[in-house]
Length: 117
Image (cartoon, helix red, strand yellow):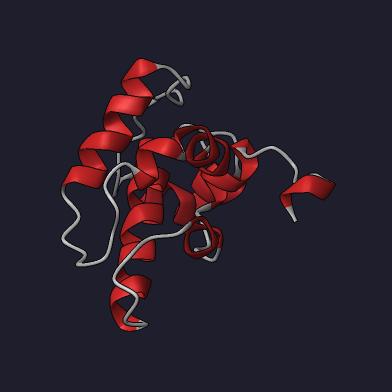
């Protein structure tokens, strides 16, 4: 974002004064990532959600979000809201795939293969 035209010119300078860029890097898909997924899953209060469902999808979740924590949180929260609204009260892989992600996560995501469809 720091290299885009969003922060150039008069209006860009005004925009730049409204926030601070904090450089960060995606999480690698390792034990810390798995622990993060388990921690987020433990906070879910869905009546029919099976424990360890998301923990078993840790690699999929990493691929979907590019290892970006904010995208992971958004993805799980969005799927949980959908699960409440549709009455299923559980998060599924299909439900996770239905959640649109932010641009940063989409740019980090690998392209889908024929087996992903």
